[in-house]
Image (cartoon, rainbow, N blue to C red; front, side):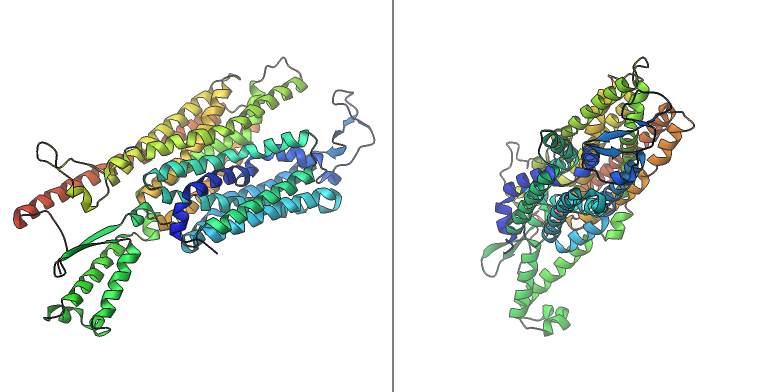
Length: 572
């Protein structure tokens, strides 16, 4: 049976720790495709597409008149095999981004539990299908398409559902969002780790079956610990209304929007029933209907708060979301182009005195270094989350309890920061920092020095973790928690489509530019400057909020002069 939100809140630390581990092992593992590709070739997937020529040699350095035949673990490998396997990877990796929008809409409506159960089941099935295909690759290689599709879908389900869990951590929400995204980005090291086990002699089928069983543990963990209801945002959980029942002589605090609505409904039913709905104003003016008046007022005051929540379409066309799309599209294109063209870039930088085998060894070494550095996403992503959560605990949460605290020695109430303004300020700093790192990455790419590319690897990895964490924290801070999944899905889909431009850029580099990425990198560096549009707008938006806050303070001062008190309570 699914636990309640109260039970889930008590288990939130267990859920957070297991979610990080599960993301690391089961989310975007397809990003480590290079290692999986080697294992699939070693197991003979689509090896039947390769044919031995009549004049052949197994050596890569013999005469020019003989065709070279390369075998891996006894299976032939060839260009046709690479094309087919990469097509399967394209299908699976596309689902990692394209499926985010429908997943976000479903999750916002039905909560994360069902999607997480479905995702873990799909991942298990994908591992079993790959293992089954490896048992007879000559006949079952086609299963790799279905398996990688399920793998991408299941991984994204687990990634997306884990992004709602930080709602349980209040002021640390952005930090935990960054931790979840960091574990997602670091899952690229999973297949390289699996390859190490494979190289030690463990059979491919055994590894996949054990992996499928571990994914079953994710299903069990979700079944017993994740609630049916969506996780409410901190604003919803901390929502407090204070009402003074002067005619009863005591104060009662109503906490939570749902409980607030229930109290209103119960009060209405205990009064005069349905007639109250038809003529609430007439009943409010009658004597002896004070309890009816209180419930009417409560109901009326609930409605404007519901109207304050912006619609999904209004959020989509808001300047902050549109500029975040520009930032994400530019950054994604920059990062994905580098990943796709990395081998070609490294080959162009290798010492020309080395032979082909030597160049390939150097490129392989640097590629391995790049793969290991992906773990930096897990270590550095919480940094941007910490920036997003900076000094939020010192902010005014809007409750009246803060006003009741003892004044300072000079007789004045200590001033607290405005929470919304602080969130916008933190987001502005986070995006300025991230964009500076992106520009630094673009500069290092322009310098034709091979050892310097290690700095490029580090900046690439850090920016990849920072940009996703920053955007996730911004959406969590600005938009309602019920729209987080849909907005994140829309952003992922649009940025993934824009990132497809990396293919024509790659073709231009390999064709007219003859393998030289200089002018492509110069163009992308200039395009990266568009990322500063978002923090510039956040500065303008923060100034607007500051003016609104100042106006409210002036109105509050006027209220005190007229009424002699700053206490705003509903008297019954």
